[in-house]
Structures are given as C-alpha cells and as structure tokens.
Image (cartoon, rainbow, N blue to C red; front, side, top):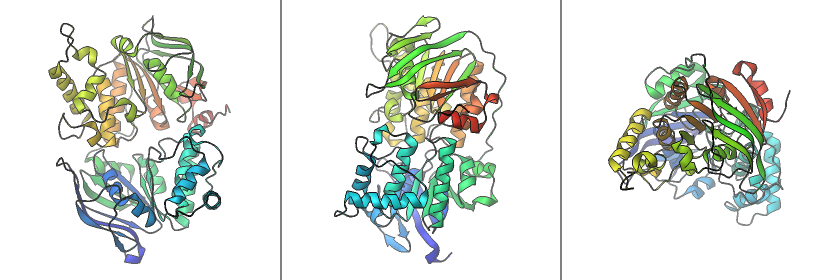
Length: 504
C-alpha cells in the first residue's frame, strides 16, 4: 500500500496512564483512504484509548501518527478537527437546549470564527442532500428522537469538512430502519472519498458495512483482515481466543405466578410532559418480558418509576402482591427488586471505587443492623464476586470507576444486581457497549436467573437481544404499548414498524 492510499497511519502507539495501567502496547493501525474500517476488541482492549489519541483527546506515551502522509502531534481535538478528523461519540456532544441550526453554527465556528449561521445551514443542506440524512433545522435538540440527534452529530462533523469520520457504536440507539438509512449514508460518504472508522460490538454490522477490520486484544493488534474473507466466528475468536455461542440454548419458559405488575401507569418526564401513558404489563416468575422500542419513547421513565426513582402520576406498581407505588427505592430493593439503569452516568458514581459502587445497591446487606455501620469486609467480598463473575478488567478493587473502560463500568453496574439474585429484575440495555464474550455471559446469566424463577423485565434497543432472550415481547412507542406477543409472532420488519409507531 503506497503512502498516497493511506488516510490514517498510527505506528508503535503506546499508552501508559499515571497509575501504571498499560492501555496500548505498540499498536499499528493503518486505514486506507475512502474505506470503511471496523475496529473490534473486548472491553478494555484499548479501542477507545486508540481513537481518543487519534482525535487528540489524549496524548500517546510513545508512537507516531500520520494523517494523509503528514506527521502530526495533536494538543487537543481542535487540532484533529483542523486536520479533517471528526468523531461521533456514543453519548452525543450536542447542546440539548439549542436548536439544530444553533448546534451546527457552534460546530462551524470551531474552524471558522467568521462563519455565519446562514453559512452553517447552507453547508448542512448540501451534506444532507449528498448523504440523504435529513434534519429539522429549527427544532430544539432535546425534543428530537435519538436517531435524528445522531444525524445532527454526523452532519456537524461533515460541515467542518471532515475527511476521516470516527463512529463509536453508532447503531446502538437506532431502529432497524434507521440503521439501514445510516448504512446507506455511510456508503454514499465512502463513494465521496470519506474515510470511516466504525467501532461496534455487532459482528453482523462489521460484516455488512466494513471493508477491513482491525481486532485489538489487551492493548495489542491481533490482526487486520479483509472483512469479506472472514466469518463472524473468526472475528469473535480473534477477539476472545475462544468459541462464542451466537445462539444461546434456552429451555421453554415455565412462567409461574405474577411477580411484577404495572397497571395503567402514567409517568411524566423531566419537563413535566407525559412520558408513560397508561402502560399495563405483567411479568411472571420464570419469564423474561422484553420491552422493545427506540430510545426516548418512555422506557427510561417507566423503568425509573418501577424502581422508585420517579414519581407516579397515576396507576399502580405491584411486587409480589404488595402495592409499592408509594414505597421508596430502598424499600423496593429489600422486597427483592433490582434495577440496571440505561446509563452508567446515572448508575455509577465515577469518583468512587469499585467496592463503593457495588455497595450502593447492596446497602441493606452491608450495613450492620446493630451499629448502623458499613461492613467493608462484606462489601469487598461482594465486589470480588462481581469482578470474578463478570470478568471485569481492573487493576484492583480500590480503582475508581472512572478509570475503567466503558464496558467494564457496565459489567460492574449489571454484576452488582446479578449477585443479589433478585426476585424481580428490571434491566435496561444490559449489554450496551459490551464485547461478544461479556454479552454472551450476561445473556446466559439472565436466562439462568429466569430458569431459577426470577421475573425479568428486559428493556433493550437491541432487537437481536430482545428476540433471543424474551419469552414474551412488548413494543413501546411514545409511551404506549403497541403490541404484546410471543417472539415467533414478530418479524424484524414488524418490530421495526411497531417501534416507529406503525401497526401494520
């Protein structure tokens, strides 16, 4: 490959953090101009660190970076942006109270202080026409569906004339239809010579959209391969050094009595607007009820209301025949409820260490009834169990959560609930951002909990997860239940339409 063909050339990249954690060990990462290049790896493998170095967020301890053949040293993302690099994070960086056009204007100002808002709109219209990504310029960001916000993020990078676009887990918040639209847009960008680095844990997507894929394992490159010449199993084996079960064995469900009942529930969002509108659901012992829907359609508010974190406007929540509608979250936990929120920023306290974060939802097991003091030995034992069961990669139990990779943070948040062996388990996006091995483990664990008689409400935007794990499926759209049925009653197409508000 000649220098003229290379967009990104990262050679011998090392990254050692001040606490001694070695994130990258001599990584070579080469991306051709105008290709879609996948980046795979287990949680903690170094993917995010490598891309943060490429985007100028952090500096490598050692190594060389060339962009389109020019050696570069970035002082911050602003330097990377000026060299034509754009990054769309899993958690968007838009100003939620600004309109779309105001966000685009702010983005353009970062490379051209003399830019006008009309110039930003004109550039965005051209990009929209070239890619097919349509956006409403006058709408406020926080009022838009997640999929539309993502389009704004992509266009925000492209109006800054990005020639290299880094996408971090871009389909995790999209419906099948939106994913198809995104892929069509990416292929159009590829035809226009834009280079795309595609980070994902979904091997099907890697096979569908990428030209080459680089696999990292424990901070080193396992290999870079031509996507068409490998299978999903090959890629999974490169990531984790063992076979992964893509289809989990699951015995037929044997549902027992009702454990979690939601009746005519009405809940408001943070703006005081109706988010859950008359939802009625029942989850029995020994079953998984999967709730499918595009992010932002009331799932978060429903889960928080069940967990006792959000007030109920009307309706009832019943756990084991006890009306808990007015009980605190702590009282519900003591009754056997467990809850995994949809965001690590909500579920974890980043400045606390692993033991302290595990203790947060296990206080009734850790606080001495006599002295009312924390039994830190018990807390450490529970945390060790989480680390062991979930295979969390961390230097020690005393490591602050903020120093763990996003995937390992997710493992801690899910694991601390799993080890409690709850009666009713409300779990939201349990495998979001996890590698194939951790995803397989958590899904197996959920099935095991079901077989032990636990009642599980699984809220997920991952339709493969919903179809694979659920004994019954409910679809939510704009706070209302569109349909409930067995998995065999739903095709991907029907689920996608229902998630978009179409009954057909």
